[in-house]
Amino acid sequence: MSPIYQHTQIGYVTLLSLLAGLGFIAVVSAYFPHPVAIAVGVVLAACAVLFSTLTVIVRDAALHVRFGPGLIRRTIPLSRIRSVRSVVTPWYYGWGIRLTPWGWLWNVSGLRAVELAFDNGHTFRIGTDEPEKLASVLSRELPRHAVPVGPAPRARIVIA
Image (cartoon, rainbow, N blue to C red; front, side, top):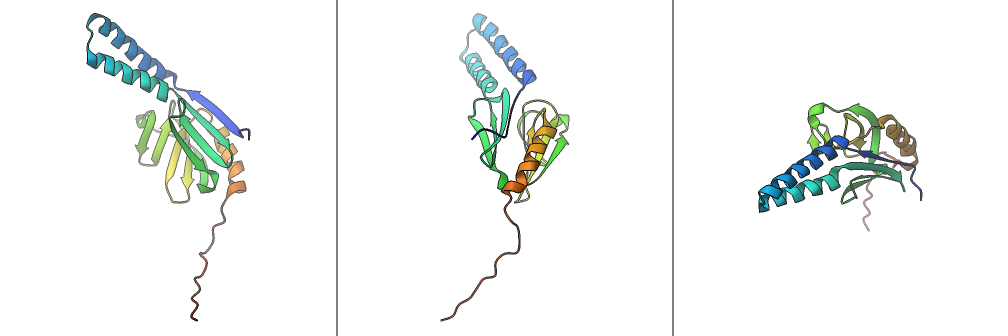
């Protein structure tokens, strides 16, 4: 099924910072080769690949969020989401995967995000440069996938 919404945001500052660090390590290693420098270079390259983009897809009654090529990802059934709102995160929450006072934040760039409130009371924030559009799509799709909430069925006791 084709996606209802799909957007990939590139973290240019993150990518350029990691590539600059990688370039510095490469220059230093050329003059002073050391295994630690090579290991640091490998870690920086891996971080550049894994955390330079954040893709958000809404399809198949689920919200799919993934960093980079998808090694780090999360799939959230729309039926678990109770509410959606556009928020601005403080600058000191940073980028990447963070545990904040509001719950988990996945962010690749910027301060704007969409906050999801789940049926279990937890929240999850997705950083995006299109918060209004993503919130609108999710708000439109949620009623179609909502699980009815009501009183628990009464237990029946049968004595034979």
